[in-house]
Length: 258
Figure (cartoon, rainbow, N blue to C red):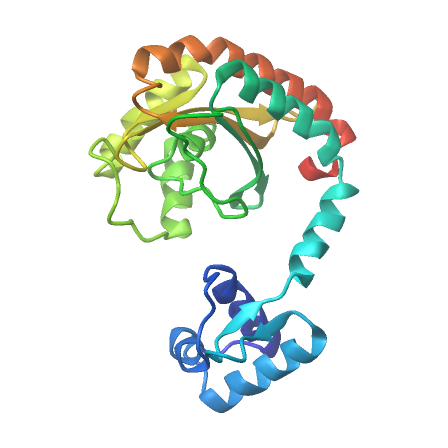
């Protein structure tokens, strides 16, 4: 990895963000294809600035809480307080995990959630990561708002590696994906059963700018397939669509959708 110095810095931060247990310097250097000497200098500077810390016992490098604090400061002034109560209400009414993804360029990133399940099985993945487009309901909902050609091109550019734990109903080809998108366009929402993982289901719909009509986000409901079989997903669709309309109206007061 050649890249500029700033690209190397952010690559280090992104790698550490995905490893809560920390990483040795050697592993970072190998993952990012950066010489060990350069990796050491980058880490030393990031430690000096307070973005990275080193565990004195195992010498692994970790992100500090400084980036997290920056994220919370941004969210506190971005209108997230307007969006969160809407997610909380939908989570209470459905008893499942509700997630909000925002569209930034060619990325859909999950930035907020509310967990409605208080007992039993819970599906609750991490926030802050991009929604895989090929096999998630959130991805399908967004792709269905495009032409087939645009959707396939975006999937190709996202180039996310297919995880080993995909469910048995995940699309296995572009033809299968396009059929899912056709159904999503007909219904006005997308749904998957045991696609992104065994035993999970989800339904999702896009949020549009109230004046411009462009897609600015995706709202989804997800949970164990035992509680969310296909019939239940379709029962939840009218409620989901009503909440997307509410978030559309609220979007003008939130910088999250700008």
